[in-house]
Image (cartoon, rainbow, N blue to C red; front, side, top):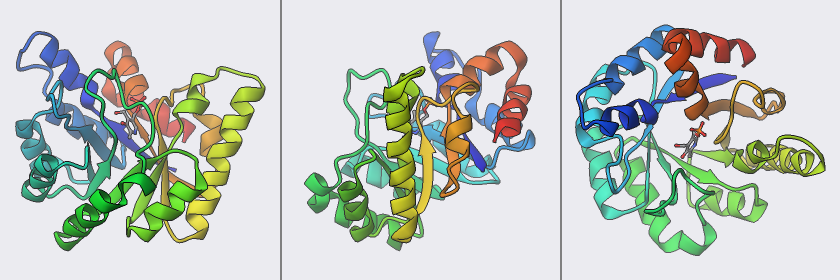
Length: 235
Ligand code: PXP
C-alpha cells in the first residue's frame, strides 16, 4: 500500500500567523525522504492554506508524485494547466466547511466534469475524483474518463466501533472492488489515522491512501520523518 502525505495543515499553521514558516515544500521533501510515495495538497478557492506559490515550489521540488486537490472550476483548471501536477483530484468544496465533507456528485455534474477531465488529460494530467461509496457514481466516473478514484473513507473513520462502522467499512470494500473491476485505479482517504487505518489497508483493491491531518498532528510531536515512518509501518 502506497502512502501519499497531505501537507495542507503545515500551511494552515503558517497562515495562523500569516508567517513564512513552516514551509510546506520543506516538509514535502522530508516526507519523501522518509519514504512517502506521493505528496498531496488542496488549493482552496479561499486560499486558506496552500497558495499558488506553494504549488509552484512543490511542482519544482517533489520527485515522487504531486497530487493537487481542487474544485472543478475554470479558475482551478487554469491553475492546474499552469502548474502541471501529476494528478488532479477533483473534490467538492463548500466555503464554510472545515474539511472536505463528502465525495463529488459525479452523475449530477457530468456536463461540467466531462470537458474538465478531457482538458486535463490532454495536458498529460491524470484525473482522480474523490467519491462516495455509491456504485452508480463510480460507474459514472469511469464513463467520464477519470484515471482513478479516491474512495471516501470519512464515514468509516467517523465511527469508532460497532455495527455502523462495519457497515461503512463494507461499503468502502464494495466500492473498491467495483472500481477495480471496471478498470479504475482505486485510492482511499479521509479521516484515516494510526488507529483506524488497518482494516482499510487490508482491502487489496486499494493501492494508495491519502492521509493528512493525523500525520501532521503526529509530526507536531515527533517530527515529520518519524510520523511518516510510523504510518508506513502500518501500511
Ligand atoms: N482525501 C481528500 C479528497 C481530502 O480532501 C482530504 C483532506 O484534505 C484527505 C484525503 C485527507 O484527509 P485527512 O486530513 O483527514 O487525512
